[in-house]
Length: 356
Image (cartoon, rainbow, N blue to C red):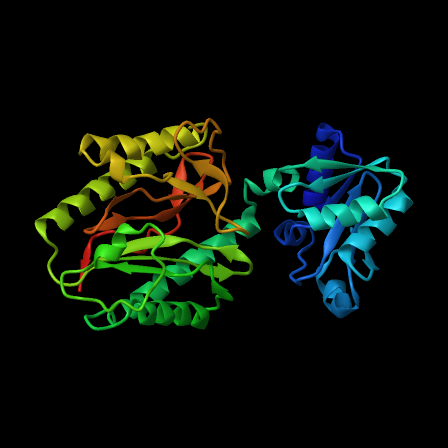
């Protein structure tokens, strides 16, 4: 945590920030380890204050490191205003993508003699590259994903509702130590598999369905993310063809992942394969995204993104093809960028089209 605080202060100096209010819960967790629902930080060159209220006194004492002075206030906003006076800072930077207008108005009313300065990406920039502890948590989540999917796959059969499959999968993840699901589990079958975010519904599985399952376990606050496709019975020639195209695109994009390669080039590697087979218009989203304390975080693997991959980044690689009224296919792995290339974290889960 001390290294993170030091790195944040360096980022603040580069941005010309003398005092910084951190209110995004994920960023607070990243800096302090605090997992409660009410907390904020006020960081300056000489002080670091963690602000919470009476309810979290004991929890903060156990979780927040001694690099932070702990302070109790009626609300985070009031705490930030009162603690800011002690710093004598003339400006307060705040997270513009997190502070809603009502909170901004409260800050403006409470803070006297200091101007408010919106900033973005100060903590998120530090979160781009994961340290060894974060990587361990993401690897554990990937293992939970693989074990849970393996457990419930035998129960996927005609007549079961998508929502039942999702519930079984989420229960299996929790039994293996997950605190919950990374997002609303996607189980999209038959024509519904054409919905990239087809959250599990009451639709009952039918023979001949392709079933896209996109899911993830939250382990120690870190989000895993995996997508696999099943076929209820022998797939049709069209389904077999489309699956092979997506698999080729996904494997080609995985090969492109290495330090120094732009995120846009990884996306292009997948997109070129799908376009060459005539399905370019059926692939309308980016090839992947970062994962960590948030299920979607930087970097983004999308068309034209110039940001380069760096060791420690963990991204998904998930191209897909979606045909309305017919169905779709998406295959997704989590990938760690290493010094020499990459490590696929979800490699234990087969990418063959599993026929049930």
